[in-house]
Image (cartoon, rainbow, N blue to C red; front, side, top):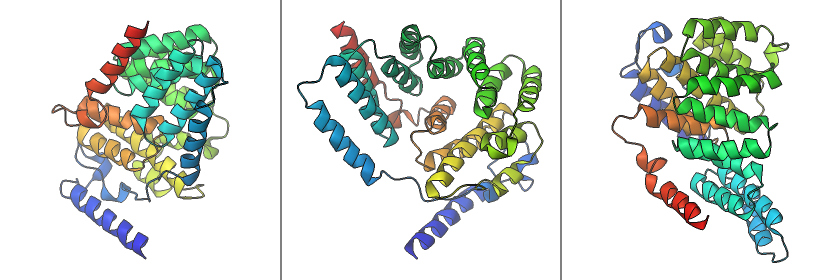
Length: 321
């Protein structure tokens, strides 16, 4: 009963805030807040007991004096992954930095360290880390994808295109690879980018089984935004899967409206993506980065873009070289 009342109250508050300025035509209007019918509320993801227990186990393993540098580095990497899953991103970054310092041949640490840095708008440092990951493991597509993301958000879209295209070629069926390649191409030639997205979408074999294809269909105008939201939970089995679905849908609808110049709607969607608390999805971290890049008043600096912590870590790393 409490959960039902709580969710009902949350829905009422959010809808009242959005509907104050919402356009009656919703998705066909020039700009404005999103249609309240598109707001889906789910119980946010919480840290699980297993995650907390795993953190204790990793701490115990790190106290083992018989482990070598490579083994310690691997455990620190797992700890960073767990911190990230728990939403403790600064602790994750510090664990990745320790991982790199423990074993400078661990490309997983460089890759994820670079991914964490770009998501906090530390682009030059991210390029350096991701170049290192690719040098250590030239065939790791995840490193190229992370570098593509860093280049894209660092306003180097043509360079991002190359990395995204390489990753796309590794799996032409992945709709998310197609979307990010489209975002990079759209920066220089929107008409060509949407044509390329349509051509690549046609090559996906089993479209109905992958949620990302539904998102592409909205971008292509094959489905309406309303149709996406009416069926957003199709195929999900529990609240965790529903949260993951919402995290993705909110983010990509925000990107779609941002590309149309509809910043108010985009801001609404990026904020909603953050409410899911799916901290291990790139859409979750990228939503905050998008908010930061749209934030003319530096309102979000203290919740993810405060320079002091990351600058201190970089200085410490440089002093140890």
